Image (cartoon, rainbow, N blue to C red; front, side, top):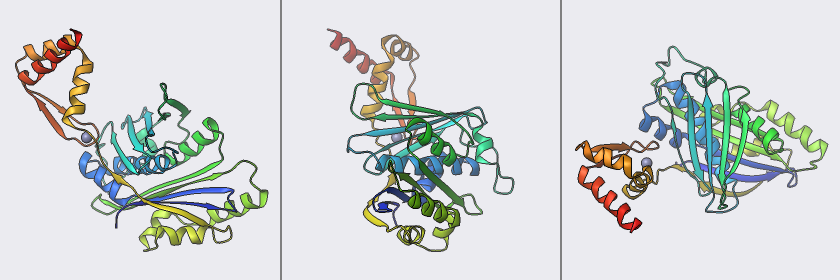
Length: 294
Ligand SMILES: [Zn+2]
């Protein structure tokens, strides 16, 4: 079954709920980036967050980028998502030498640092939100980000469960937000429900559907599912886009590269797709820049 996002409200519209199953996304990322278990978990969690936060955006042409920079051995992670369920991402370091037998916590791999959120909503300057990492486990860090940077009481849960061979067994998450002036009893009921609920990946692993898990969680809070959407790991890179990037590095660097008389190879950070440019290709890019300069 493909990964999907469920959007819902509860507590008579006072609670917004976004939930996703992301096993395919997390496993695709693991296969592409050949990640060790702790990196698989960290990247899977951030991709889940990206998928959810993308789906929370209002317009189809908006993009969101989540950037985690830490002083741990992984250095960081970057995830970009759109509002249509498409998400992609990469770790700065893909293998930390950890294994299923000798695991490393995500917080140790990331270390201390910061979370940056960029929202490209079609304005000239993107919206930039920032908060320090308070745990390095990512869900808590995003909860803190929402409280601090957007002043929205939010509960974020992100999980990636691995098989013994390091492949992804289950992955998913939810983001639950309270509208302003939510009734005290709704908040209490939600807190109680969240405290009583086992982890999402554990419930998924028991064979429960996302919808059934949500019905259970909000059984006293009048859950109303509003939509279900497919989400997937997909990269939209192309030779044309990479060419654009080469144009932007400038004439001098291009001249240097051409004088080396060797093919250059550019790998897409997100999907590892390889693009090769011969000196002749580079020359024609240079010619085009010079023509445009007239
Ligand atoms: Zn790509």
